[in-house]
Length: 275
Image 1 (cartoon, rainbow, N blue to C red):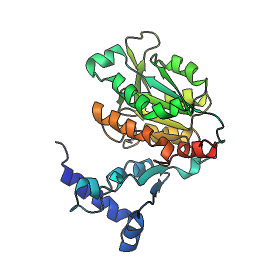
Image 2: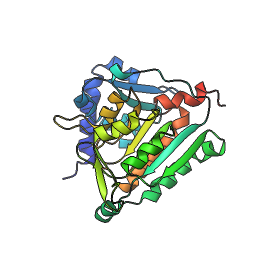
Image 3: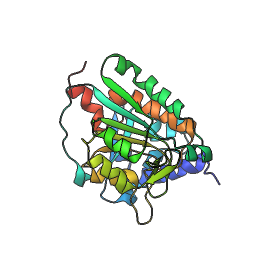
């Protein structure tokens, strides 16, 4: 059955105590007025990145909006694989964003979602920056492996995938031979089409369980981050709901230029000299 809110709070509190076992560390992790706190989880092991650190809960006796540490807009968390960290060149132009909308007919018949809702949310979040000329947004609806390979060669700073995912790190794309059918593209295929093109700063994969590793297999996000030279990758550690996913996407992109969450792309505007 579903895990209750109270059970999630208790799980999050166990994680909190494991990371911050003494009162001194616990005091340091709580931001003062106007401060921001960044929690960085560094490990070479995919099973470490499979721990739901997003559930960190400082006190099970507090309401969820206060107890869960990451409910605080001044607290953020990233996962990092130290061995693949690299320096990327500073941008001196607007961010180029590619939104990939994958909706093979066979998949949509079996598991329908509202793809346009997420497109609207991203446009709403980025509207101010598009209007100012800070962001250029392109939407790709022909999401076959070969078509994406050609599109990615144009070079993008952020690539956002919206669609269905499967266990083992598969993304469901259109079949190149039969567009109405689907092709389950595995982690290696996905990594390959990115390696053949200029690497983005960020890949956002909005599909189920893309950040969840298996017993012997690392997650799709872990594999892409490791194999693509430290590209920042955002995914999901659980199954997602249509509405919940679109709201989190809107929040993410709304704060992209505010330095939250603290990903590589968050500093691009400042480094590029944009006001």
